Image (tube, rainbow, N blue to C red):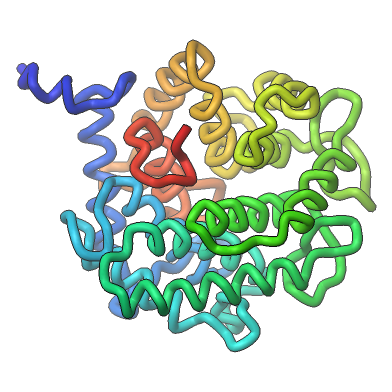
Length: 326
């Protein structure tokens, strides 16, 4: 029988089974980290070590461990070191030979490093992280398209929804950490999302290639709109209604983990019964999908990706990272 005192330490909605599932997932990530501090995708899309490392590092940091404290401190520290080593002179964070679409990893790295910057206790390392995040923000600002979005590489001079969302969330994380972000860049990005919205409330693939709404991008857009404080904006309300209609917890979408990585953040921000119902159903579904080794297989991208996404969702109630707090 669980210790009653443990229930007082658990956030609402989290039970012992969820805690066990989280611990198994965290331990899986910890033991599969490479010696250089990275993780790599074993899926069919390429290895993407910067993107995978940033996502895994974020999942570990959601547990409350920092670079100096907690059971996963050394793992998080190695994540930071790996990403700092892959920060290029122009500000792009990437392992170029292994990432055909480097802006995804850049955006995920910006989120992770901005969160680490806020909890880093060693002054010298804090300065180092600050320099990299500042240059990363400057690169994002420079590479924004005329329409307000981003594409797969900094010099692509185009835009599409999923890349745009990773950049905006990275910028919000940096701003939350006290690093200057041009207001106009975020404003133009929010307008880009608005320009991609269809009458059904969903968000299309890109402004220039309008077509049917994309459920996964729409779920992600809601999280970005909420991060920007647009909780009661009709655009956000319509997008959320569309996402709830088209993104069932039980799957069926080709980008299920990606979609719920962001939709879960939006639902947590929303709170109340919407969040309680969502988290109750999603946590049960995720626990059913967990493999015997503690991992999750996510969207054909591999176990690092799936496990990182699942853990970030399951740990949202702990609110250990500012970007995911209400």
